[in-house]
Length: 146
Image (cartoon, rainbow, N blue to C red; front, side):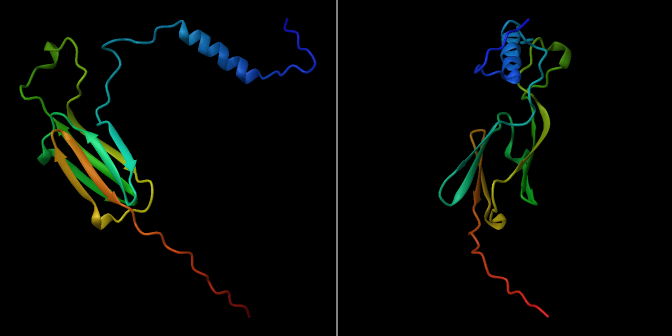
């Protein structure tokens, strides 16, 4: 039976978290070849002074198999990864590089000048430039009464 002393903090959630961490450290949860890889590309988004820059790694993707769309503040990338040589599924002993059609949608961080977007694809890396829209100044709204 636990004994609690006066002035000693007792946080049951912290104790539970500590016990779960201890339990998970003793279990090896890596199942090689079982965990599916993600089909969509890894992306980085960073901010410069006047724009956001998105980079996506797209190995084995041809530029003509890429499509970018933007609607309602969401950028959607669609593409297809193909192998140079078609290998039947039953021949694979390990497959970590996903192939096939993929789609990824990313909400944009702020208002973007959608008509000013540009994209460049070079050496398997897609770079999308998302210029920020100018900040609108707050305006006073007149109030009328009877």
